Length: 143
Image 1 (cartoon, one colour):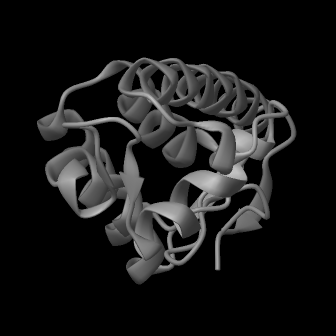
Image 2 (cartoon, rainbow, N blue to C red):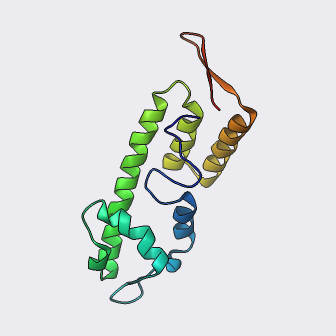
């Protein structure tokens, strides 16, 4: 597998993939925006603090639901920019086609697209399939 691929524990953004999915499904486990000041859980502080810090905002300065909305939007923008850079890096490698398809599905696809591409990549990794550069006939092991 390429050195640019995501590990199960860590994403390109510094938070685990499971935490990103968990926040999407249960934002209330991370932050309560129903009143001012907003209240971050311990999990929310651990999750958002590094994300907000990337663009110069301290989590302690995020007090209102509007400030949280703006800060989380900025974090999302940076995440998408990072993902686009990562996709381009992987696409430029001979052995990155499967990873490229998966990351494109994450960026542009549906949950079904993501699941399908993740299953394909896992199968390829499990089977130890090889990538062949058709221009040079060079074989690259993906393990």
